[in-house]
Amino acid sequence: MNSTERVRNTILGKPTDRQPIYGWVSANLSNELTEAYGSVAAFEDKYEFDMSHVFGGPGSFRGEVFDRLRAENEEMTPDLLVDEDFFTDPDILGQYQNIKDAMAFHKAEGRERFCYIQTPGFFEQFNGVFGIENQLLYLAMYPDELDELYRRQAEWTVKFAGHCIDLGIDMVHISDDWGAQNDLMFNPKLWWEIIYPHMKRVVDYVHSRGCLCSLHSDGCVAKVTDGIEKLGLDCVHPWQESAGMSYDLYLDKYHDKFAILGGICIQTKLGLVGRDELEEDIRRVFGLLRGRRWICCTTHFVQNHCSIDDLAFAYDLIYKLARE
Picture 1 (cartoon, rainbow, N blue to C red):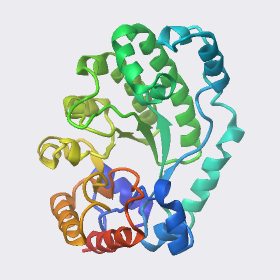
Picture 2 (picture 1 turned 90 degrees about the horizontal axis):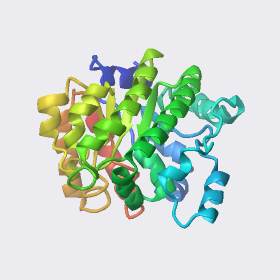
Picture 3 (picture 1 turned 135 degrees about the vertical axis):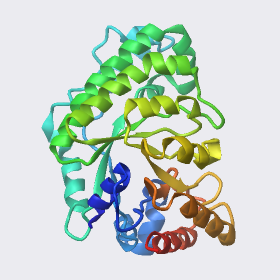
Picture 4 (picture 1 turned 90 degrees about the vertical axis):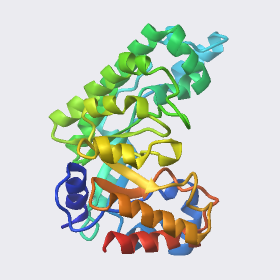
C-alpha cells in the first residue's frame, strides 16, 4: 500500500496497513531543518510522510484594486467592493506550474504521497482585506454585502479547484478559521446564513469531480460541527483539543462522518514541555485514535520555539507508534 492509498483509505474509513503520518513543519523551521537534514524534504523523506500540503497557483485578489480603494477612502468596507472587479482570472493555466512541479516531486516513485491543495475560504480570506476585528463587526453591519463577496469567492474557488483536480490533486483543502480559543468568533446563525451555503457549493463541486474535500479551521468550532457534517466534508484539521474540541466528542458523534488530521498539539505540547510529558501525550492520542479515521499530524505549523532535537524526538516516536 502506498501513501496515497493509505491516506485515502484512512479518510474514507477503509482498512490500511498502518496509521498515516504527516506534519506542518516547514513554515517556521525551514532554515533549521535544512541545516540539520539538508532540506525540509529530507526530513519528510526520513520519516516517510504520507501527505503533502501543496500551495500554489494564482492568488484570488487583484491587489491594485484594494490599493486604490484604500487611497480613496478612510475605511475599507464591504459595500465598497460589491461593484468592483477585484478577483483574478483563475483560468490562466500557466499559473499552475508550481502545483504541477510539487505534485511531480511528491508523487514520484518512492514517495507516492497523498497531495492536498490549499484553497481560500471565506471569513479567513477577507480578514486580509478588512482585518479580523473589522470583519467581525461587518458581519453585523454588512451581512448582505459580505454574502455577495463570499458568493464570488466561491465562484473563483470552484474554478481554481477544478484546475487542480484536472492536475490530479487528491483533496481540496479549504482554509477558513472560524474558531477562537473557547467558542466561535461569531454567531452560529451567521455561519449558517452566509458561510455554509458558499462552502457547500465548493464541497459539492469537488465531490462531483470525484475528489475529496477538507477543512482547516483553528479553535473551537463545536457549535457548527453538525454543519461540518452536513457540508459533507471528508476531513477536518486540526480538531483542536486545546481549544475545547474533545476527542470524546469526535469519537462519540463524528468518527463515522469524517476524518481528522491532527493530534500533535503545537499550542500546549510540542516544544513547550519536557520529553516525558510529550511522549505521554503522543502515546495518549495514539491510544485514543489509532485505527480510526485519523492522520497523525501537527495541529498547525510547528513554531520556532521547538528545537530540531525535540521535533526529531516526537517523530521518532510517531514513526514507531504508527507501525505498531
